[in-house]
Length: 311
Image (cartoon, rainbow, N blue to C red; front, side, top):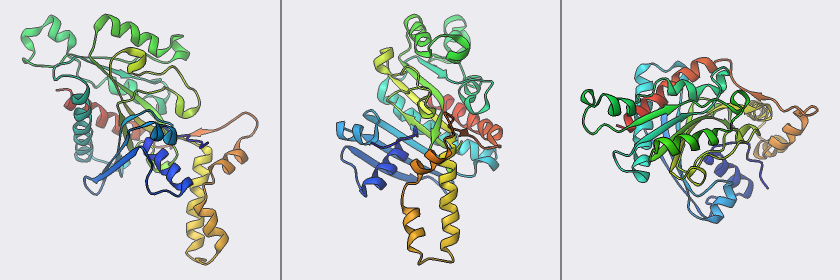
């Protein structure tokens, strides 16, 4: 059994392949496209039960968009990234609903905790149109798609499971599709607020940090659910494990023939490091000090991507 302390299907694929020394996985199809020097799009499609069991993810489509140098990105770079997100998101939306089907956008997370604030921040930037179409149709361009949005908060502050809130909204407003935005956990420090995963299999809030809530998916809500997530945290064990790799790299520059170091770097040190770092019942989840700026940039990319894709 593999410890996939990551929400990213692409990382799960890489971990499984490395552990089993495989080039391909039965039931998993992969493609990769480089958009430019800073943006890469990878697609993982799980097509059968073998793929599900290997990656611990449901059958469906998982698109990973990597954006480099996001911390210093200007408006031009942010706009380019948002266009890539819009293209991929629009293609997925078209797979699951008709052109004018009403969409509900849901921003998960806690607005008062910066690494978890992405969802609510995006909701503030989404162009909502449902109320305008209903009450002021004369001011709305013909053919505009009805879009509504909500940030339902978290169980700790509302006392209500998010899926329970969404069931009530779906029952009363009857959208044709839901887009859910949430913060994720990753197994790589390089992916913090620089990777976007889009999938059509729903989402389990809190799963990446061991705080699992009820699933938000088509099976629980009765309509298609597209999730859009961004890693904002890693475990301390991941941070230290990656740091050891960097340390070994530097040592190997002077000692390339050292068999022990070569072997140590090839092995997955995550479990050993995690065991050493877990003092008592505590397991640290960490985020970079620049997370405020990273979240702001990602908020703009995601919000623009959604606004472009639903029109």
